[in-house]
Length: 350
Image: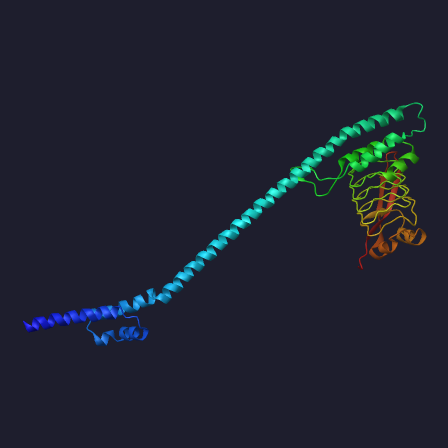
């Protein structure tokens, strides 16, 4: 009876010790029990498994590990939510940018519609212009002071804007209304002195008159900076003191035109044609692009530099030279032929 009792007591002692080993939290004792479990206890002794459980729980579920794990998890959540917040902000910024773009386009469209209404005003002005010039008593083809003032005011009111072309806004500010008004004035046979005065006080900048002919036109004093003048035939035109600055004038023809005081500053004259022109020391070629410009004399650069002394002649000499080419013969609307034997190109030593 005593042996049985002793056995039960030993079993209870082993179970109690196993529980204590399993609940051990001191690091040194935990490690010692774990590495010495095979020597201290038999294979089926519950204290061996208790030592393993103790160190397992110590590693995974100690307060420090839990704190680190919880902190890491919270840190991960913080980073995740910050990333989501940045992503939402980025999407919001895109939406705002798209909204601003639509608002901008709508603003330009509204402006375009408002400017188009000026075409009705221009129609009234051109109608009165026709009436005055058709008057048989008006032999000098002059305009009344009232009508002149309306033309001047209209040209200034027709500010440039961007408008839709093929579902996209134009890159540059253009005034189609000014372009139409200018073309109408040039075709109206107004007295040359009066139209020169009108041009001097009107504003035709940002015009678009590409691919047209203005033969024998009077363009004295006209203000046409920042305009599109590509492939325009200015054959035999009077262009004294005109402002063609910062414009696209590629492929245009200036045959026999009077360029006294005309400013081409900062304009692109590539492939333009100059033949028998009148220049002066006030003609301005500063910073112009003269690539492949056609001329008729091999000493054109020296001529405009030494004889005429145009503004920007040093710039031309420093950046361009003239080469001989196979003759290019061009004809005007009256079948007159003009032979161009020389071309301006960029200096190869630059």
